[in-house]
Image (cartoon, rainbow, N blue to C red; front, side):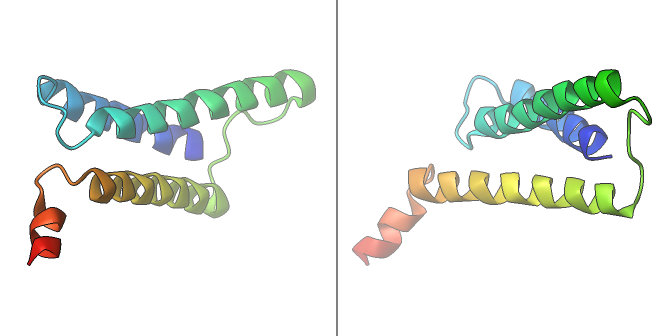
Length: 98
């Protein structure tokens, strides 16, 4: 399930980034790349596990769903941290200047 969830997050963020592409002020490209990296990593993991061990290709249960949600939340937290550090609107700089 986490593969499906990260793939959907990657597609959604890519579409939003594409609409806002000329100005990547909010670093949506970075968020999109994080989701695509996770999606590709888990796709390779699923394919290799399926070829080597067989069984189900996708796990659809509560644990897999919670893992997908936690991965998306962690990626969003990293993205927010990058936004706070880069301060695209200069809000933090204005607050610190007083």
